[in-house]
Amino acid sequence: TPDGKTRVLILMSDTGGGHRASAEALKAGFEELYGPKYQVNILDVWTHHTPYPFNQMPKTYSFMVKYSFLWRAAFSLTQPRLVHVPTATATAAFVGQRISEAFDLYQPDLVVSVHPLMQHVPLRIMRLRIKNGMQPPTNFATVVTDLTSCHNTWFHPGVDRCYVATEESRRQALGIGLVPDQLRMFGLPIRPAFGRNFASKKKLRKSLGMVADKPAILLVGGGEGMGPVEKTVDGVAKQIGAGCQLVVICGRNAKLVEKLQNKKYPPGMHVVVKGFVTNMPEVMSASDVIITKAGPGTISEALICGLPMVLNAFVPCQEEGNIPYVTENKVGVFEKDPQKTAQIIQSWLGERSVEFQEMAARAKALGKPNALFDICRDLHTLSPSGAITLAFGPVVRAPAQQKQHRA
Ligand code: UDP
Image: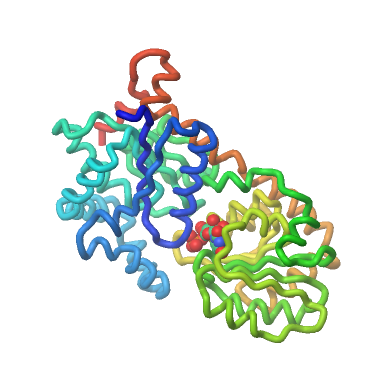
């Protein structure tokens, strides 16, 4: 490129908070590892580069996941390749022109998708562009941001690389026709700040308005403050009360913040209520245990911080598999009932404290703080500048590239 930078284009969409979080983590990872050598752009393709009604996709998603039967139907009906491949082909016919314009605008040297609906359509358009001489051959990689039970559209046999976080996803990818050479398993890309060493728990707690000496329960409902947050607060207040401090993160749910801030709590119970926080690494490091919906991002972050967890809600389909992932690895439990959740945590902090410590150690061991940098280093080898470094000569295509024209 004229400015000497290698351009990476990350394709994402704001369905839930996790895809953007992963995209931003990758951007930060490239910055830390390679500095100004790379220019990373994050693009919400559906919202900004497709015509109506395709640009309504994130809104449609927010609506549908609230009605689990609707979401389950949409998820399972589109699982077979026989359904989603022709759908993608038809979609590409409608949105092709606009997406092609986006490629012209960003002129990527490497394209990275962090969204299940960003393989089939962009790959098809990119291939046509390459065939028609509109862009040079460009590598395309998928970073799967779900932990388990992924939608099949995450996996396209024509990608140059596909990064999965768990063995289950790896097997799913192989079942769809990807070959072991295309796959890398490092873990979910989590913001670099989670891999750093923090100040002591005591100092962190002070800076976050927490008290030093009480066990800290963290309650999170994903980026949107979903799940039975208020009922869980009530359960903990009734069951544990002054025996703990509670940090509630309500995400973008402003109404919930107000409600919980104005609530009466038992004397001696310390409660901190916050909306969307940008310092989740500190908040988690200052806590002892987490209650959360089964979001892949939050689970992976909690593991890195060594927090045993109670999963109390999940988005149907793509988050369901995260429950056995947590329970089978013995780093937490699934409990929907707020009262029982409070009882479980009370026992962890009391008579089952040895078991609790063991869970914390297992969580820490399962967490993958280096996954982000492992992914970025591998992506680097797929980009023209990585290829130059590796080959010490003119740009060579990464070996996986040959497969791009196969499917
Ligand atoms: N998050 C955050 N601040 C908040 C609430 C959530 O930074 O106040 C982050 C959280 O750390 C995680 C992401 O938002 O990285 C949520 O992703 P997850 O996959 O857990 O759930 P989603 O919101 O995508 O359903």
